[in-house]
Length: 179
Image (cartoon, rainbow, N blue to C red; front, side, top):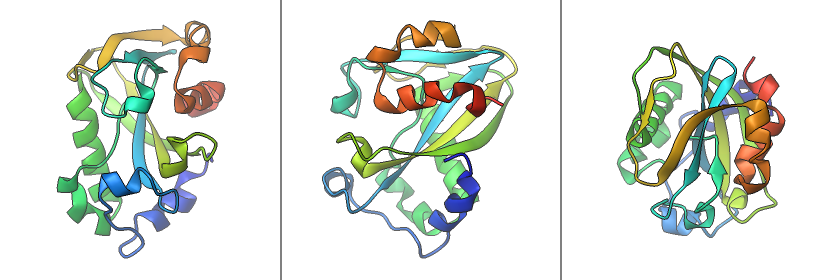
């Protein structure tokens, strides 16, 4: 969905969300975990990496990805009854845990991603962000990120079949997401 604010404001409104322990949420498709999924872009290239063995989500190990982000932690529980500002603070913390960005950037929410076909997608709702960097200065912080590099769309397409589903979906709409 390319109109994220149409729904996100409601999702993040006080009283419309609550914290559920991850162990329970991971197996119950009656609930969707809100997952920030940030594409890191510089000019016409997007950061790409392969999820290593230390990935928190074992169902995604060895998959290529163009998304950075992940689950809110239990320490974020107090944020779940808050608003967009609290959500964005949690996003910044989550992205900062995985990578170090040493350049000015613009963060825009560009889409919502819902995939009920896969086991992983059935319990997650992606909030797709694009971080447009002024310079390609990014380093990994997490051991699970391997081979971090910036690739153009045609180079990303060559990796499409080995990417996680959310990255495939984003790649298929990359031109629109990066506008």
